[in-house]
Image (cartoon, rainbow, N blue to C red; front, side, top):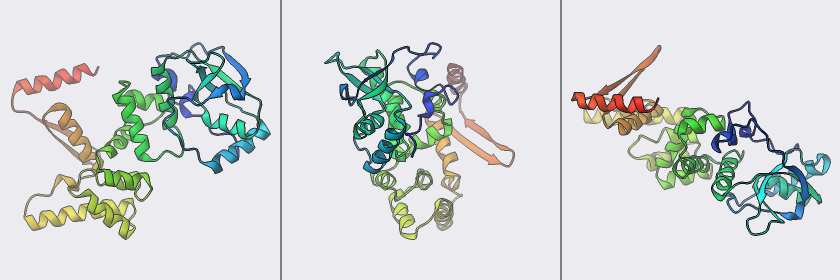
Length: 293
């Protein structure tokens, strides 16, 4: 097994990555690459992950024994001890180097404060391959809530689509019981997105698991339940029978604008309509749109 994959954010070709998040243009690469004693490194205090899969670490250690560490570990000097280094990104490589009994490891030293160190640790955590969708959503939420990043900025920096960021964040609107089902793998993110707009998501989630439905079957099951409910009530077809992602976007836009929003989809694309009662409301919509320029 080769050394752990290089995080997508670290290169220039796949989004602007950490340099974008930290306000660094990346035009001048740091010149502080050096080799230091393995024992002089310590885990970062802001590392959000505490569990490291033993089998994965053993495989990485074997690779390190054979090839060494190919990608430097990102560190800063320890605030408590200038002779030690605190790991910002690359703790798995360091642990593997210890297991492989390497005396020295390559490091890239950056002079960063606590806020930047916390941000780097969080971004690297999001890029881990074994992150479940809820952990990923929580990571996005923290980057937005604590560090003020927009969904668009995260999408660019992390090499993700804007819709992926938005859809993943919506998982946090689900009840805790369903989030636990996603975290432990009983439901996928695709299953969960179909439950975002339904009125009884926990009950339906248990039915999905019991019947072993895949994502497409789940979407059809949710639509059939909505149609049955509307048929019994004699009312119009519910908006919940729409594609769940479209319905969620309607809800998000309505909350943002404070007005009723409708999205109609067809083979050629679709149409967005915003219902207003006064010209003042329309002026408010235009002001919000201008503010996003």
